[in-house]
Length: 109
Image (cartoon, rainbow, N blue to C red; front, side):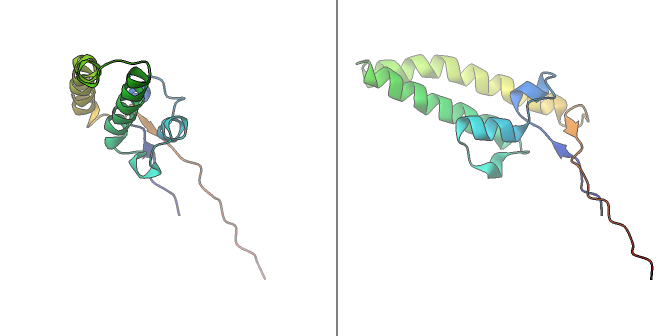
């Protein structure tokens, strides 16, 4: 039985890097594997990076409101861009990657 090809939704694949899989992004950022091969991967990645950056700014003594304001000015445009890219690629097969299939053989008696 053949498996359906997995579609990579990560921003790298959407921009033409077919070597970076959604699982690569999940592993690199420590995301929930359930977001792999779904449009949710980019939102999850951005949210994770947002929280990491917020922690970093706070650990360096930045005021929480200032840190959140700085992050909001950079994160929101990224989210809008990602949603646009996902909408454009929604019906495209450009990001599809076939997964290996197991071949079975019959044993003759």
